[in-house]
Amino acid sequence: MSSTSSCLVTKLSHYVSLSEADCDRLAKLERAERIFDAGREVYQGGDENKDLYVVKHGWAFSFTDLPDGRRQIVKIHHPGDVIGFADVTLKHSTTTLRTVEEVCLCPFPKSSLDEILRESPKLSALLLSIALRDQVVLIDVLRAMGRMSAQERVSYMLLDLISRLRITNPGMTDTIRLPMTQSQIADYLGLTNVYISKTFIRMEEDGYIHRDQHRLQILREDAMIELTDFHDRYADMDTSWFPQD
Amino acid sequence: MSSTSSCLVTKLSHYVSLSEADCDRLAKLERAERIFDAGREVYQGGDENKDLYVVKHGWAFSFTDLPDGRRQIVKIHHPGDVIGFADVTLKHSTTTLRTVEEVCLCPFPKSSLDEILRESPKLSALLLSIALRDQVVLIDVLRAMGRMSAQERVSYMLLDLISRLRITNPGMTDTIRLPMTQSQIADYLGLTNVYISKTFIRMEEDGYIHRDQHRLQILREDAMIELTDFHDRYADMDTSWFPQD
DNA sequence: ACCATGCTTTCAACTGGATTGAATTCCGCC
DNA sequence: GGCGGAATTCAATCCAGTTGAAAGCATGGT
Image (tube, rainbow over all chains, first blue to last red; front, side, top):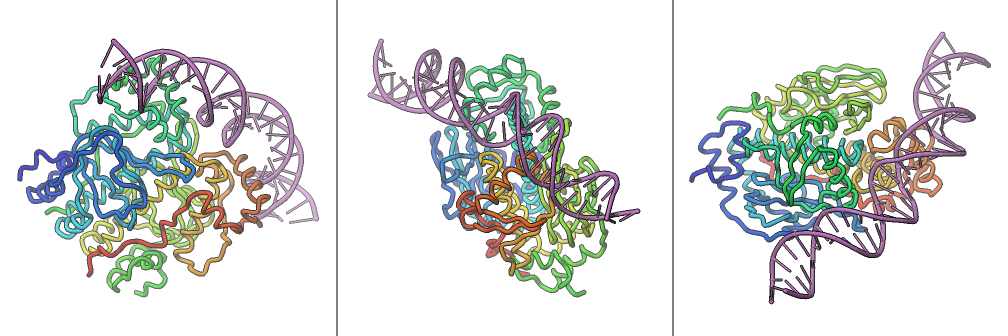
């Protein structure tokens, strides 16, 4: 089985070199695949969660609602991401998964994870590292939500997105495709669609960004990094303590 | 080595029964111990992080500051908690650790973790589960910060605290000791000390809580659970997939 | 070409929570 | 028991972001 076609392998081998066997273990997770149209719900909060998903292409996001309808998007998923990892210790899913655009997902059962943990110490360490790294990222988001103004939050989000996309596309420039609607961005940043609109317009006037359809160019990345005290959590990872295989 | 004195063992064996050997491995982490006075910084964000800490007694918290001084407390630590786990994949600490009151901490080197991962599959699974559970909890906090009003956030925090304290004190009633100052609570919930004060007074008037010194009694827990759509993430954990030893 | 639909932008009124500064109360400590 | 510093409370004012509604723009389907 050639592993070059696996998004997951591409993403994870950015952090540590993987043996042929480990690549195959990961690639196996992407054996099945299912296409979902834009704006579809893949599963809902409260559903029994038997499967995890690897994203093959397209964007999706996970969210929770309060009973009165207020919505919080908690994670944005890109190709190569594993969806649902945080919920494996729970019987039921805590979030709902919705596609932003047409998405290809590879479902695999929780039990495959189990297998990896038993067979590959190196992949186990990598999975643990990813879980811990995700914690650090969530803490960064928390800081943004708790203490940053609207413009700072938007800046933080854009920097975070571009950092993540750079993992798999090292040649990436300063321009990203941003398929989410402003309402979705608002639900991610704890703001309203109206204020997101205002903030984008303001940031464009001030020369931080340039927009063209769903493409967004970051013009003053350094200024935005300074503004938000941004740290890239994706580029590097301390893998020196990993067991060898 | 008797394990009954280890806070960590007490906390973790709530989730899964541990072998004598595993208990000893955990208890070993609490061999060294250091007392810190109230309001002391144990380490700072940016410090090289070589050690993790087990809390033996007392409360502490981790926070980050923005360059202009805005502060976000990101985690509150209780006895039995492991501090610094999220940062093990990073060379430098992302947060500062400060004590709330007199605290006893047991420092141990990152490498001890390494050892556990190599020797005990069951503890590895447990550690991974804890990391994933913490992610779910952070997502709950994120939801509170993004979409809840001040009173809802305070309610959420109190419910979360009491749930955590119940893990190790099953006989706990509806009253908790809350040694944090209102400014600290504000920095945790993304509000201001003044508004926390107002909210507490309001909640006491409305009969949700009763305060007496640093003791706080929760009078209408059900109402608060309903208000915040609260889910206890600590009581149970799906350990059915754990490897046996 | 046309309409339906959903997204973005704009507008104006409103409000929850922030800010500031001063006044109290609390509490440990000499 | 009284002093000093911290924590809390009070009151007045202010503003970032909300709300709701309406108007402009795209896009795609028939």
